Image 1 (cartoon, rainbow, N blue to C red):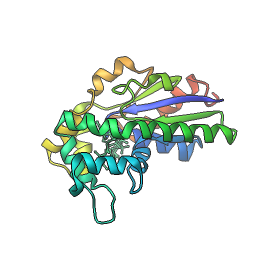
Image 2: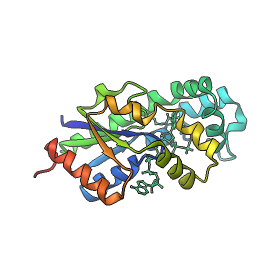
Image 3: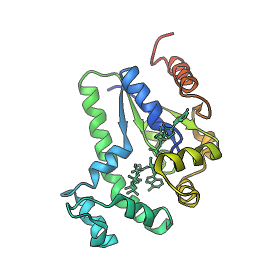
Image 4: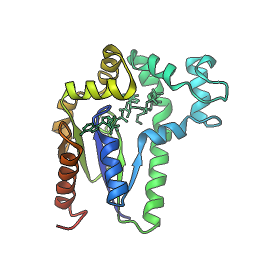
Length: 202
Ligand SMILES: CC(C)(COP(=O)(O)OP(=O)(O)OC[C@H]1O[C@@H](n2cnc3c(N)ncnc32)[C@H](O)[C@@H]1O)[C@@H](O)C(=O)NCCC(=O)NCCS
Ligand SMILES: Nc1ncnc2c1ncn2[C@@H]1O[C@H](COP(=O)(O)OP(=O)(O)OP(=O)(O)O)[C@@H](O)[C@H]1O
């Protein structure tokens, strides 16, 4: 059994950017909740059928996959619908992540990272030894989200408002990476934290 660290943040705060650095440049396994949530709803999976039953067959594309754009438009504007979707998808996401984690340990890895956007909202901190929050100011988050996803300001705000504000997440995090600056500056902060945690040597 190895040790598990949590990477969290908000939508478009830079979690994937940090995860990619930790996996591609530092060589650790990073298990991504967004990828898990995509797998959990593929055609043939229980959650796919449940979503069609709950939100209507028109939520499926011709190949049986979920129309993510349509589902996003529904759930990011409606808390009740969002909680229903979460209750369908999250158990499968947790199962998948745990399985990936065990596979990494059985390959002999000693440290794995979980990238979970809703780590604090879903009260999952017991799954990890320590947490790293990828933080940006809300105006930076908004602009990066609008640009990356080609969203209007009101669409982007609806997504940001679906999560606990990043400023509030700070109090729950063991370490905070300020990602308002350049990616190089962010990587250096990540290295410092991993040294402090003794994941990498000085
Ligand atoms: C609503 C869906 C179809 C939109 O898909 P889309 O491809 O546009 O976005 P993607 O899955 O890449 O998520 C992007 C970001 O949105 C945010 N987000 C996604 N789902 C949620 C949610 N239920 N509540 C709050 N924020 C969310 C996260 O920050 C995530 O990193 C999809 O996000 C989904 O199925 N969400 C429910 C599962 C979930 O909670 N996923 C988040 C991690 S488990
Ligand atoms: N320090 C930075 N400087 C400039 N652009 C950045 C920086 N960090 C991230 N970005 C850009 O901001 C956007 C959001 O980053 P990223 O995809 O890593 O966020 P995320 O937290 O994984 O988002 P999501 O939860 O939506 O998947 C991307 O387009 C990314 O290239």
